[in-house]
Image (cartoon, rainbow, N blue to C red; front, side):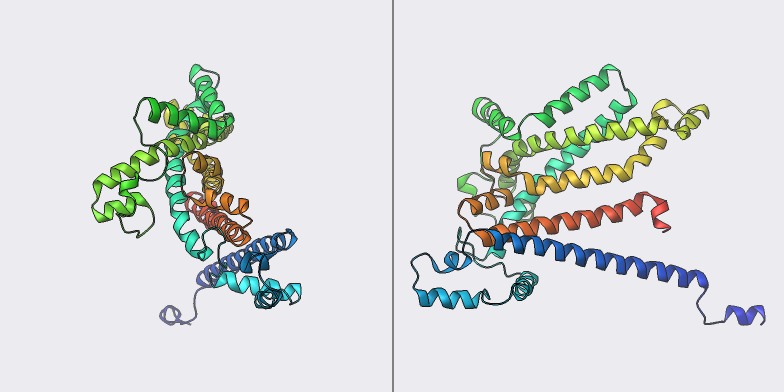
Length: 358
């Protein structure tokens, strides 16, 4: 075969086939992981709801319903079916977005989740940005200056933020910065006279008010957000700084950093240019876990600041034995964890060329 004929050969090159096979394996692995995780999540929430002593029929018809109404609801909920059939019905309802009605609000749980989740998303996102912006540089400096005064100060500040209860910081912050100094707004997301003025588009008040051009509402929402976000951000940066310091200490003892110094690089150039990129993969994991924990674990902060988010919603639902709301919120939290893990997997390949080659 001549060179010209070989160049016109329609058969794909081996490299193309190998790359296509690699992509196909990654897609299959991604789908399989997603399916297994979803099955595990739904199975756990389903069996927990069945193991509780709360009668799901009574939450629908009430404790004064007649036997005929009770039996009708019992059949309508599929509780007379085998357990595996009930689970399949449960999965089908979740995939269609049907979590049932909430006893707490008398509204569909799906609508409640759409209403409360943006508030938690807004709070956790701003807090995580604060944690990254301060915690990562602080951790790098502490690791690079191990044993010096900078390291001691950062470790003490981080230990305080990691060990002091968040609700105590929230109460002290409200008393000092709102009650005494008046630097920030009080509890809630907005002042009462601003409530309902902006039409929800994303559910995130800062974005919705900016889109509507209501800058006075934007300023008021920011004034309400700054204190709870700063307290959660302090908790986040304490964790991120501590882990970043640990990663940096490990990398600064590696031979490639010593080689970079021998080649004439300054100390801080070796730290930021050579050591820091090599901690990105574990650091992404830490940031992802911190963000996910804030999304589902900001219950105390939301309670102290009367922040109408997901954590407060699930807590109130537990007190009311509203299992539809609890299960719906749990599924949402699990889905958030899955989504964050998938984003972290993508970022791993973005920052580590070795993973892109696999």
